[in-house]
Length: 151
Image (cartoon, rainbow, N blue to C red):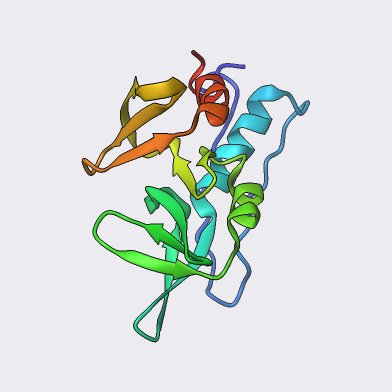
């Protein structure tokens, strides 16, 4: 399917009282349609992050990584850290379609924020994130990373 030739894209602004929706009209639901749907879903996952008695709406796409520390889970964004109420395994479920993967027992990384990776000691990998931070990918999760990156 060539987008330019066949697919018409319409955007309609509606009043605030109406619920927002995305409707896809297609002749058949193929991989390309699923891909579009996944991309749309990816953009929209919003988590609630807590910081100093305030609740913030965090876009998953802004999260560099999640880390569990002393029974609490934190999401690390470009220049702020929020506590999230989900457990790591719940986040893993929520995010598995969305560019995130389990990197170690205590962390989930956002692949979209990785600028480079390189092998480290004893089968582990180290990932350098866009903000310069480093994260370790444990040996048992390296195959997942390679798979997600298409290596």
